[in-house]
Image 1: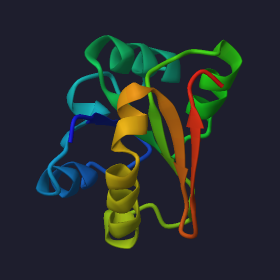
Image 2: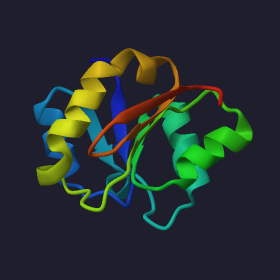
Image 3: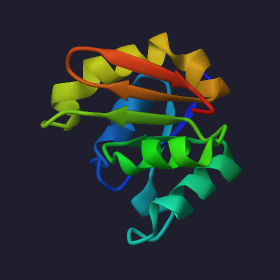
Image 4: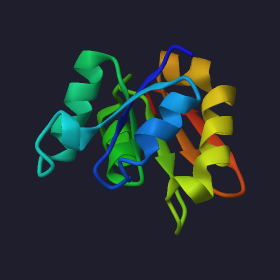
Length: 122
């Protein structure tokens, strides 16, 4: 597993130990940056440090589409219940299935029923 995950403020820090237990490197933004920073600052940090943004925020996908950027990759969850005890298996399955896509640049959108992959730039 080559990807490192930067967990956005809109997801629980409880994701960090879950992801680490499954073999991924993960940090929550609150431990490395100002929780009030803009999405652009978070994206720029992730790109500079070779992290994938893990978020529930639709703005990250929009930023990628509008900028035609080739990175960073974004893993976006779309669900009402975004807690690890509800989505853990779905997120881990998506990470395993799309590890190469995330490593090379993509937007992965995961919900309870399906996963969609958009290769960057979009």
